[in-house]
Amino acid sequence: MTYEATRDRLEHYFDRTASDTWARLTSDAPVSRVRRTVREGRDAMRAALLARLPADLSGLRLLDAGAGAGQMTQALAERGAEVVAADISPSLLAVAQRRIPERLHARIRFVAGDMLDEELGSFDHVVAMDSLIHYRPADIAAALARLAARTEGAILFTIAPRTPLLTAFWAAGQLFPRSDRSPAIQPLADAALAAALRRAGVAGRLTRVARIARGFYISQAMELVP
Ligand SMILES: C[S@@+](CC[C@H](N)C(=O)[O-])C[C@H]1O[C@@H](n2cnc3c(N)ncnc32)[C@H](O)[C@@H]1O
Image (cartoon, rainbow, N blue to C red; front, side, top):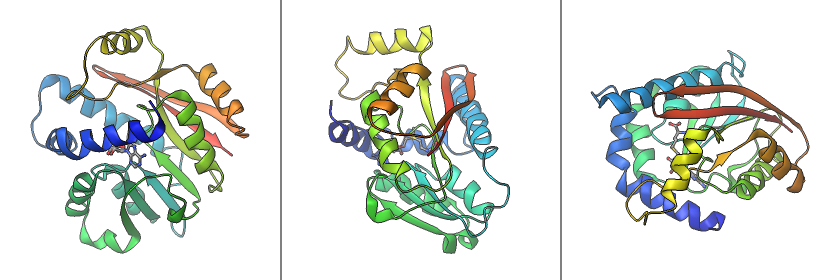
């Protein structure tokens, strides 16, 4: 599947199929036990990514790439950053706009569209939490190459680590038609990511920041400093 085809499926999934589910997961509303573990894992991941950034982001321009319902956007703006919150799903961005306190809106530009769009400008740092995990390794590397060309500091992003459990999920997912289920995630080992980045001509320091596993949430934070 090409980058565009994956992106279109994700748009359909996050903007329509799963928009309400995602809005609920990212709120304080009660959710099932399984989803609670996902929520806890996502909170821990957000904290791990934020810990890599300066506590004071005043005057810095950050891209929240695939901002979803805006939890990371809000945290970045609270630290003083000027944030571009880009997401392919207008309905999730509308949730973000509704939820984020008015006092922060002057520092946030909400953009419904592709997070790789060059029109978004250049950045001091980029954060892409769980927004690249559905793309093929070569597309992840190409996306990082495009972001690296416009980023001064760190690109913080997550991958789905290649654990036996995730690999089994992924393999099982290939057997079924996926019309209305979540698009498959692409488990990726660190070495395969490094190789894909080399092939895409991306130089820079690649570091594993954290691996978070809580129930059904398994994700690995990476940092690329171009
Ligand atoms: C799993 S959600 C994570 C949202 C948010 N980063 C968070 O952690 O709360 C993935 C988000 O990435 C967005 N996304 C995926 N591909 C994108 C693209 N090419 N451009 C913009 N947004 C994209 C989806 O619409 C979705 O909202």
